[in-house]
Image (tube, rainbow, N blue to C red; front, side, top):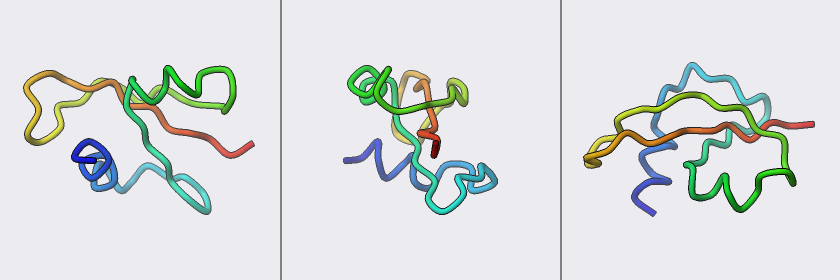
Length: 60
């Protein structure tokens, strides 16, 4: 839940159309090949020691 909250507040300039959905690498592994995604980059999220790989779920 903490990662989801951090991702929700991350870089509001990323346009997601109707709904912007950002996920971390762990969630990406579950949906890879099912939903279209775009790698955003590795970012340092507040409260985390290691950078997190961030992906955006795209609308088709």
